[in-house]
Length: 309
Image (cartoon, rainbow, N blue to C red; front, side, top):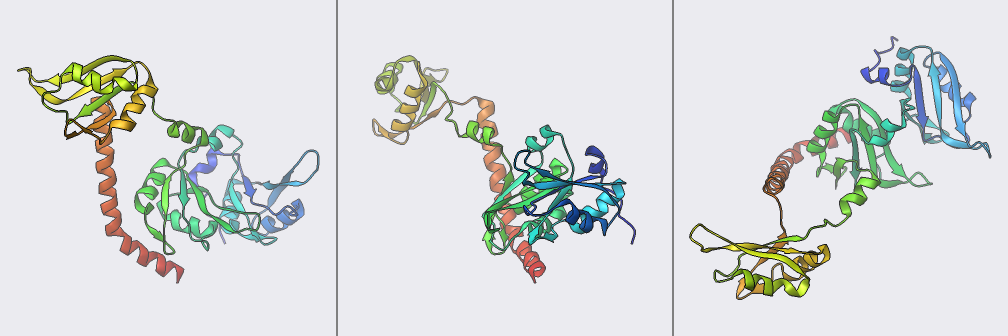
């Protein structure tokens, strides 16, 4: 049997070297050598261990004489059970910046308990070359209901998200989105800091002084302006700028949706025009994708049911 041509991404990584992860703690070099050497000639094997205790860290490196042999071994042995645990094989990449970047890395949650790393790989493989695929599991090997798929190309990740987010996998609706590092998630969850507040649906007779009186209980105000047209008539919206961000946030929290002089007003963070347009565009795009997903859902479900059968 001829070995397949190596994928293009192999050139980016260490030559003819594979990373083998998710190893049982009792797997030794001899066992991996025997397994991989049946597929292609192995140059060396190293199970990585704790420097003090000598216990396995759960991963190893298997080196071959040629990239073609490494590629063939990866294709043939990925997710093969060793000591009862499916191993996970990737091209060896010692560059930590690549591993930590999260580039083209897709996060999937709400997975059905029977979906393992191999079945997840099979589901996503049609979108492009996969560098790594893993379903998170506990110490007993039971799925935690979420996993990760890292593609070679960002376009593949985007397509997978567009096609599978919100779809049914084994009867459960899954979330599929770009993986976000913890630091970025914390930053995203941090409340926006702002001092300028936008108010709309104001009474027509409202003046700048009226606006200031309505909002001054929340903190010191630097300006309060009701927008007017060229004839001096109120446009029924305005802006209040506070000295401190907590005062602005309190005004939004307490007055948004409340009745002000018989009018239900909107109170929110003031946004620049470009920011509002981007937000509206994103909202429209999400609604469009949701409609497409609803149309594609039935056909995808049929494909997955046929695959399971």
